[in-house]
Length: 404
Image 1: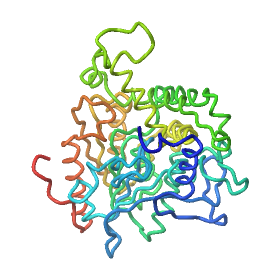
Image 2: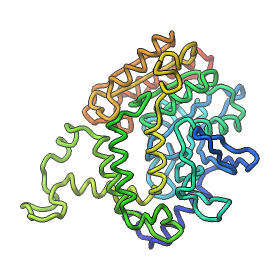
Image 3: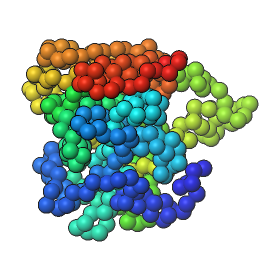
């Protein structure tokens, strides 16, 4: 049991509302007269974006790396999480001496628009009503998230980011940055990502959203106002999604058909198998730190993502004339964002005359490989950033530690 799980529902909701409005992170606040225009035609104002930074911005402001987080991530990429107390979600990649070396680079990571850790989202207070936005918040897209991040980059006075890096939904943001702000992205690293969401992935997200909305405690999206929490629905959504992050081989190797704390089947509906117990644990720990309505909004943003929609179906045309240096990485066992989708981006970049490198890493750990201890991934990212830094005339990452 985590610290937040020990709190009663009212206290849990109060903590979530606190992080949504007054996060344990720096915040860039934009007043009502500086609204954020959204792809839907709506606008948000006032609004805010919460972020973390690591390292030091150099005098020329040429060493900044923006890290874009995945669906269930947040800005706490390399520091302890203020709600769970757990280490940041990418400490294997980001930190002193790591491939994204905070001794040499100035690293920014922001909570996405629609999130629940301080950037304006459905759990944030709507200034017009004094209540949580809930479903009154306009639907947001990946492009909206990137436009919000661009405001943050402007705040630091950074004209061109040295690199934009991310995996999964973070990789979508990387590609959006390169498409929408090519002159502001010197290099881009997109890992386990795609240029659009597949129908299969949209289907999985819809199952998750329906699970949330079917929970009576969802209360039409007004659960925060009523002191309720749709834990069961959100937990089921997380369970279903988590299956897609792993591979059949990794599930079998880790769990097989092993029983959980028993020698015989119970012939009931308790968690007889280890995999059942594992998924239930994943579901219940997730609801401690994530807002149910944010899950609806962020999954919808992924569903709407399709770079080809802006160019009559031509992905090459999206990147025509780009001078950004690209590195794309995929994993052999990732069936959520399979290698074929990364190759489609690579072919489009080649067609646009872009500088691009691509590696498919042999891993049996599925989509989540980009978050796990995969030494080849570290070598690739470190090597790419070293070459890009040399081309830009700045210090690259430190030499790799023994064994990387």
